[in-house]
Image 1 (cartoon, rainbow, N blue to C red):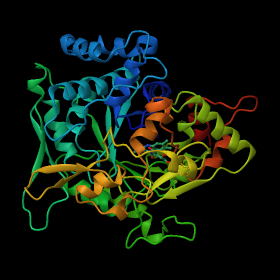
Image 2: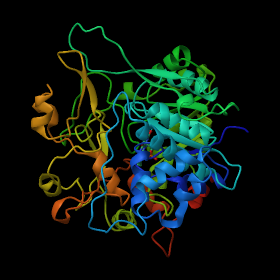
Image 3: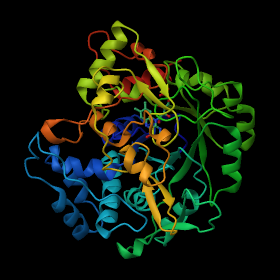
Image 4: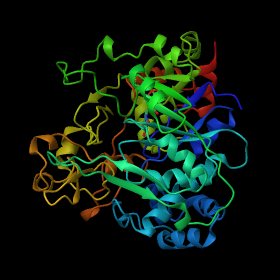
Length: 473
Ligand SMILES: Cc1cc2nc3c(=O)[nH]c(=O)nc-3n(C[C@H](O)[C@H](O)[C@H](O)COP(=O)(O)O)c2cc1C
């Protein structure tokens, strides 16, 4: 099958869910599900009673029915939990996760891809963040068991992944170096490993998905093309106007008057150099999500475009209807601000925040929230004095972070993206006295472009209409 011209960008957490990816895939383009925190998304859907029984249907197609049944029954709440009851917590994944965590991760990734691919021959990809390492190996295997066609990965330098895909396709044991904030002078290396044979007995090799690295610079693309552990099949070149996390500007961080990172010419990838690599590449961010933008990308030698923001607010996406409508109404009636927040994300990367009242972008809402770290996907492993590995997140309670050797200054203005992004898709945790975790919406700088996707007589629009408008000449 030839390369798609349009990639619907992977959008976490659960924004590019299986419904959105399937809708895009049915139109002959590459639909991408988000694999970020998908174990928790899956677990919470089950605690909501598995509306539509979609998770159950996916589980019934998992190659090991005993495993699927075990995970499903552990999490499923018939009829759904009471609205004001909290979701139960899953243990955070460590370096050597429990069998239960691994099984859930494999099954959840399988289910999302299975449902996106169900009933058609179109292409489906899955998106992960290199920065979130702990669940990566079992996640890849789960997605591959469902026949995922593409793996796309950004937010880091995913050199190890191509070789891991080769090995997993043969059901071989894999390992990956864990990035640990080390003590000065420490030479200890730490590895994550995963052995498919301990989970399932399968003989038939799996399809090796194509691997696309999401990068912001041609230098990193060239480096990955040359030095990865296996074949890199292409690149998404994403500029700093794109929704979600952005690569930081090159050199020392400079902030504008209103506190946003300042990007310059050096931050733009050299497309001439990209063409020389001889691998397909797709352009993403800002203008590439506009109506009729495909031609500009093709003229620049790209295979096509990757688009996020217009899909994030279409009918099929996972964002709660109430928030989608607020954004679309604001786009129609006024300017909607998007702030590139250098501090919001514990990952250390700038993160685009849509300024919406009542969400965590609202100062009062942020101040009211008590810091809790109970999901922990963005925690960083660090080496303790006794060389054991601990985990800390600058979004956690300040005292905890400092006790673990973190600097208090690093906690300043950090938002808990894990909890907030789950709330954005309607899976927010309920805390004491019925306080529900506030949401946070990310979008690209070009958010006002959504005006061109809104239908005349209705606020909402479909994924198909985004595709039609972007592909039009
Ligand atoms: C709501 C939202 C969530 C996103 N989440 C992710 C993510 O989890 N991983 C990722 O690689 N990119 C993520 N992105 C970036 C998109 O995949 C895509 O590259 C980007 O949105 C393209 O630029 P645009 O927003 O101007 O269309 C996200 C974008 C949005 C709008």
